[in-house]
Length: 195
Image (cartoon, rainbow, N blue to C red; front, side, top):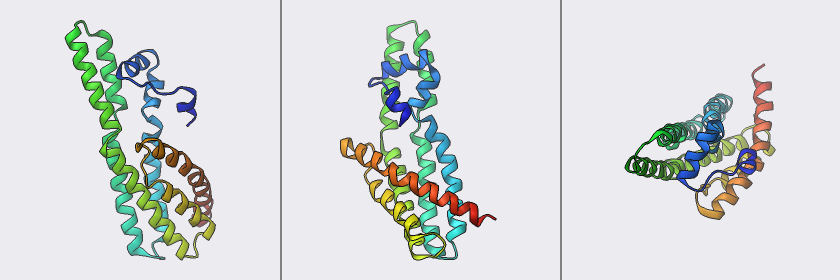
């Protein structure tokens, strides 16, 4: 949120190309570089939650884990940060209007991919995973009811993808509040369980 607030991403492909050529790191951050790293960690969180809750409800935890991992894998298909960096470098040295036009068209296609089906599938599958994991938590005595309620709240708010217009953006931002609390609570409990 800080990166997007301090340096709002460009509205156009030309804007992204310009951003990458002036500050490649900010360009990568504008196209969710942090999410790429976050989702690697998220896979480990899902695994830890599976091992913590598998005795409470093995079947539901498997059903929760599989879509979560599929969602994470699908997310990587929607990421275009490094492709846009490459196109921007090519655009910078392109010597003909035709080549620049082709690179812009390729960039537009990548931006549509970034905002498209793969991202929405990732988002909804991870909402589903969060809802199921939180439900299993609620029914078990391993995590507190408070922890599971924070997870359920975040999962409900994540049902509408952030790409679904203004309402999606509002829901995605609101989902971060319970997600942060949930993350802190599960981290504390997982540390205790690991001892």
